[in-house]
Image (cartoon, rainbow, N blue to C red; front, side):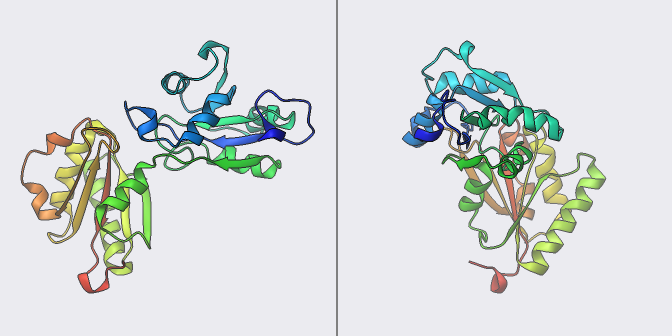
Amino acid sequence: MSASRPGDTSRATPGVLYLVPNLLGAVEPASVLPARTIEVARSLERWIVETPKAARAFLKTIGHRRPIAELAITALPPYASDADLDALLAPAAAGESLGLVSDAGCPAVADPGAALVAAAHRRGVRVVPLVGPSAVLLALMASGMSGQAFTFHGYLPVAEAERAIRLRAIEADSAKSGRTQVFIETPYRNAAMIVALASALEPETRVAVAADLTLPTESVTVRQAKRWRDGDPAAWNRRPAIFVLDASRPGKRRR
């Protein structure tokens, strides 16, 4: 990192854009993040972030070497223009390294940042992804469903009728292609999603709900859709969760 250490403007080579994974909740950083990720994050003085408040909390939690108030923390605009991206990456042209961090998990994966990363590549800024938790991949790993072929859908429609149509569509794709289907929901709507899964899907379709990943309250529950009618769906409310679906027939499931 000698040619791109934070604050070094004496070299002609561009700085590095580090993609820094955030925690998925309130846990000891060393229990989730590798030492190198923490060390690099502690050294960076310029940050591009999803939400400044969340970023400051993260930097305080990992014990940044500088007072948080002295760091340059800039919010990534939701619909950043080329001019916005140029301005955000300008320090890298002077040899300063930057950190990109989202509110939780890995930046640019089910979170903002892809446009900034693409702009960095176009401008010749080196991009370095650091190791840390991705809720999407952790849920897929723990589901027992195919990790060889899967589709991530982000958020599904909120309206009940539209959500049911979308669920049946991704279920049909899973049955036809064998691809695992992964999606998320706002935590306070988890109960409504579980009710929708139980009513809209075929009874034998497998559904995993992975909640509070990496936290002490973590749970990964896999049931057929018809079994999600049992119990209290409110038990998953207000818990960050990833939903994983597999409608393929047993003989066609990919390993």
